[in-house]
Length: 170
Image (cartoon, rainbow, N blue to C red; front, top):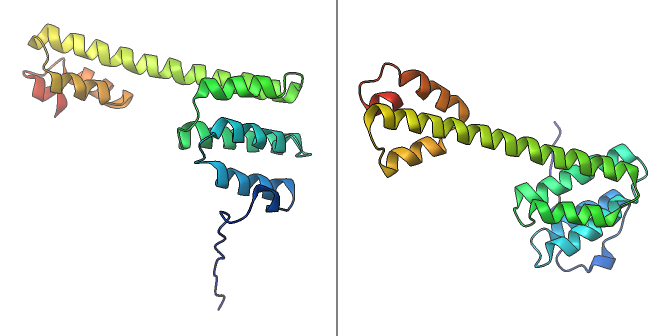
């Protein structure tokens, strides 16, 4: 019967120079070590320089994408605009890096468009509610603005037959 265990390593007493191993090993250890530092952009720049040493460009791009998602979306320690500027400064001549930057920017645009569409749906439902039932109170407005797209569509269908604002939501 196999028995599994794990080894927990505390990286904090080691200096950055003491973290050894191949590029990927150092990259992961340093990323975990620096994620909550006071200078996330500075450390992110050093991590991107390490990624540039990864021989397989597809692997490098996957690592870069994961790292940026972790720093920007996962921890919210780095603003997306700052990450873009950092990428543009880091490797302006690297065509693979430029491809990634373009893809990263396009993903940001798509997310912005999706958020705009969802906000438009919420505004439309709120307008319909106000036309049918009169001015909406703050609680109702908040409920509509916090709803996801699918819920907004469901409520929009219900408004056609609802007799009260509460009937739209239940």
